[in-house]
Image (cartoon, rainbow over all chains, first blue to last red; front, side, top):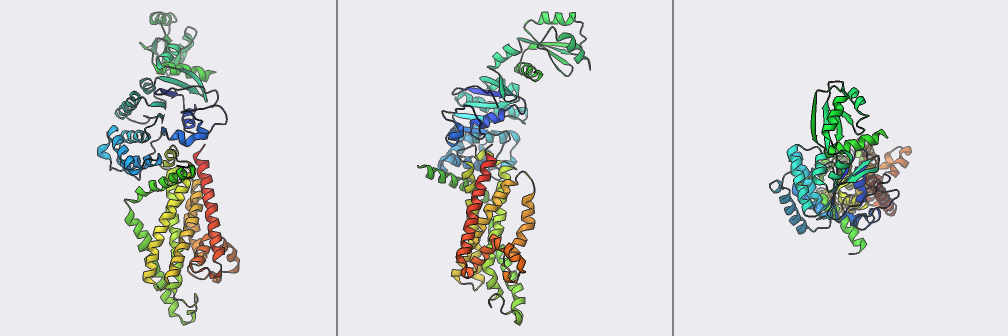
Length: 288
Length: 260
């Protein structure tokens, strides 16, 4: 990690985007003092995690990339044992477990073994467990990865509720829809440094333009078409035989494409999304 | 609360957190702690003992004691070592490799050092419970005096826990899946117990084996369980040193593995 410079505010939801190995998980682990820095300045909730790790962790909730629930324990025990780690006495832990089971909609599964839960339920339980200490800051490493669409929606709803309650969240994700739906601000990492930062809309405006012209070329024709158009559209990038052209003026862009006599099967004009901005940014980065 | 109290409370909650796992399988634990050693004691003590005691030339074996009474204190130690093997490795393997529950634990105010010490103490508590169960069986089935049985139980607890620290450290070191731990449990434990002098006096071993046998913690546990034969302090000192070194090594490897 180098030149990673950002700050987050109380109650804010910040998303870390970046390809595998970009440094997202390491950043999250540094926040909790679980990965140490060689140098640099990091203050979390007023202290340096390398010095005051336990007291920072007392006020944060951490969700690892994989749901690391204890399969040998019941759903309720998973919450109560974790509550104990935060210093909750038995009655307090039991009461907190009741609240969290209700929050996650798992009250009727309290006595079930963790192994019998579906992927979505397990993830909801893992998120609830990260809330056992009523944290001021939640560190979420890919909270909805590997879930089916319904389970993902359920997890997003849960995180949305926490956002409304004012719980600050630092989350990593590969899922652009998730980042757009959940985050107030996004930090894009590549090779251990920040390459862009802003609200989802700012990133779209800055790096993807207003609209996207999507050309579907005939099989194998993508590269040739891209060669012809790259001079007119420096932000163009290809995904297989699809050409994605960011533009603020779709009519003019389409006219340019026609003038260049590019052979394509179909064209779609749509508004730019966060994914377009992310691809434009990271494609530019990997070309450097 | 002072820093020390907070630290100890953290260790205690780690131990407390390990307890719910045993809620469902306390019967299995009772069997392994009570029924199994009792059966082994009866089979070896009365079965093999019957053979030995029936042979007039071998009457002097083990200072003229019936084989059952000779064997019983050592069986407490062997049982404790078996419990250590069963209890020390599995939680570390699932904690670091399987479900990686340790990752989540150290994301709380609990530190790797507290986790390591809590783990060792929990294994120690499990060894204490099974050893007490076996001690009751020894008192009920043999003529071993109560004082010696209690000393043997203490020796078994100390030896088992000391050995558990070495196993825990080894489990952390090999959690990447080197398979070394499987080799140790399958190949090393049995010869170690056989060399310890639990089943026959270690003086019967060839001379060249003696220095190797002396290095084994089980040997000192067995000697101490039989009353120490004038070397109580040596055996006690060895086991305490082994326990301290093993705990330090376990803490060191927990720290290294869980903080990157």
